[in-house]
Image 1 (tube, rainbow, N blue to C red):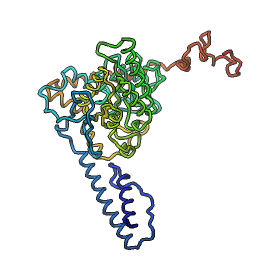
Image 2 (cartoon, rainbow, N blue to C red; image 1 turned 45 degrees about the vertical axis):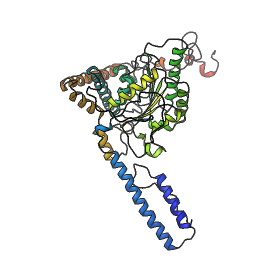
Image 3 (cartoon, helix red, strand yellow; image 1 turned 30 degrees about the horizontal axis):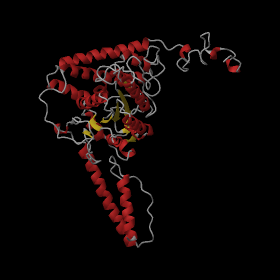
Image 4 (cartoon, rainbow, N blue to C red; image 1 turned 90 degrees about the vertical axis):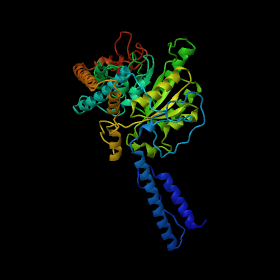
Length: 470
């Protein structure tokens, strides 16, 4: 191979690995090196390079436009195959944007069912929960800008279909582990709106007595095991909860009549490249733990595009690598999410092990209220805004004659009252007392933190002198 051909081959290989799907131009390349070829050869090299770059950029733009086309009814998600046995994987091109796909060989999409996918009661429950999540987060935005909340407040607007679709299928003993975007997960699991709002206000009546704040919602009665600020750190906790459920079932014989208690671990696309994620996938599959790993892929890890940061952006493919099913679902459609969630939860209850679900969604606000907007393409914003999960569900309910628009308006009015009452309750609640500062820091209440007399050792005048009895 001559020097000119070698340079061309290296340049084209570099372009194919550096151009990402959201960019119409390649990333900056390393400075080209040449070995003194003639000026004619250099001119040919530059012309071929330009033509190839323009051609490849055109392909990328075409892919983007294809991805943003409205989906048709034929794209509806197929459910899990009837058999739980793993079969050969279907290869899916990285450029395609799928609404739902299983790691098992897919069957043809079934014809539209004659009956609604949900009952009237189920549809109204889903709608009420999604409206609660949206209105609650909108109120959080108002309260944050009024100075009622402090630090970072990460909102969930636009992703309600994922929380509602999964959590509303759980039982009370089932566990939920969340991220720093955890308000709506807590609400879906049944934590009262007033307790969540009071926690955001830093008040003693909050679900963590004001010590958790926005990113650390926890409720023992509802088995919400916490929001976690650092990406990935909640996944080992969820895996441990699933192990405890299996231990209760197999060793202590304490499981419910429905089967194993299930744990759902929610996390974002940015976590999918974290080491803890892979370690826990391996452990969960090895021990067949009753856990569902739910990746809420909203396309951005803070300010980093998912497609720029991940070698294979289809996260669901990581499940089959460990022997568990991997599923990709349209996270903007609560009925599709619910269909996938039901099979994954039932599978876990039967003791058949974990499932990895990638729910592709889109949040209508920026990463957090402290950084309210991100650089996103206008066509991307308009595409997802037109597919608002609440609007879609409302349209479905009315078209299927499950409820009238007046009934849905009544639900919206009731949720408005709930959120308003939550704000009033949180605003009127007291701040935590100073004596609460060191509580829950030490495991032993009579240990280093609190003396035998019940008083804090740090309040002893001799404490800082090193002479206090320990």
